[in-house]
Amino acid sequence: MGTRERILKIADTSAQDVALEPPNPRRKQLLVLGIGVAVFASILFAAPWVKRWANATVSIPYERIRTAVVTRGDLVRDVSVQGRIVAAVSPTLYATASGSITLRVEAGEQVTAGQVLATVDSPELKSELRQAESSLAQRKVELERQRIESRQLALDKRKSADLAEVALVAAKREQRRASDANDRGVIAVIDYEKAQDDLRNAELAYKHAIADADLFDERLAFELRASEFEVSRQQLLVDELRRQIDNLSIKSPVDGIVGDLLVAQKAAVSRDTPVMAVVDLTRFEIDALIPESYADDLAIGMQAEVQVGSERYSGQLVGVSPEIINNQVASRIRFTDDGPTNLRQNQRLTTRVLLAEFKDVLMVQRGQFLDSGAGRLAYVINDDRTAERRAIQTGARSLGAVEILSGLQAGETIVISSLDPFRGAESVLLSD
Figure (cartoon, rainbow, N blue to C red):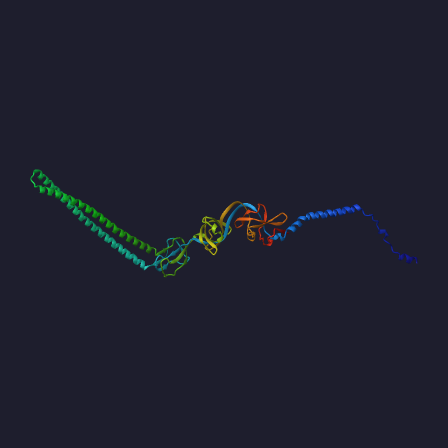
């Protein structure tokens, strides 16, 4: 029995029990006070965020927008277009007369200035030249005959004047005899008076003969000059026909290569028919089509930049078309320096035309906000990561920047991406 009682006895936990002290009321108060302070601090810290959430009607992730800082500097207004390389000198040669043409070169052949490229056989023009030369020879013969006849007629007139002079000398001699006889009283009065009348008639005849000879010389000289003018006019006609005959040989005006042949070999051509083009590959220019919106700003002499690979070359606007075709203005840009040496015909290059330069202006990087906001609206980013709507006024625009006339200050950051997601809200929250 004693052994069974020892085996069934179970030990209790009285040895593990610990007596607890009664709770301290002051410690409980401190705990409540700490919790209250933590809650109050949390409310103060979260108040701006709560206010921001309350004021913002739209929330947009910050990574979905693009921003830029408003700065002050020099703004260059420009336009970038794609240009096409063309030869600066590429004259088109024309047939100078009607006839059959003979081509002496092939397309793509290298030629030099003055080289004969084609000839035109014009029987009509050659016939006109022969007729004109015959007429010129005839007029020259007639002029020589007229000169001989003029000298003969002038000689006759001078002969008459000389005879009148002889008659005058004889009349003067008879008058002296009559005067001496009258003084001696050996001549009748009527004979004396007749001698005086004969002298007077001889003087008048001589005077008129001299005047008539001089006037006849003037008339002959005038007629000779008129005939000489006729010969000169005919000579000019012959010279012109010879020049046209010489121009039947079509020569290259520049060194270069032959472009497209516009007529076939031995084809019948009329005057001013295009025959071929010669391209001078030593000088190039750029044909560019500029949008119509810049037409009023374009002017000959504007500076330009041409991008050729990684290099930039200066250029100048040398031609602007007065017409607008397909909402574009054709223009011509010429290199102001030597230009690149590896250009080829019809090569495409990016060309930047400098329209105007504005010094020390407020500007910001261009973006889609100009289109979506019509250039009158911007969202300024505040320190609390909200974007505030603000009315602005823009001015000149370049490829990379836009002038700000009012509404923004230097150093402010604005949204330059599309404003469509903002839906016109006064304030937008930019979330992380």
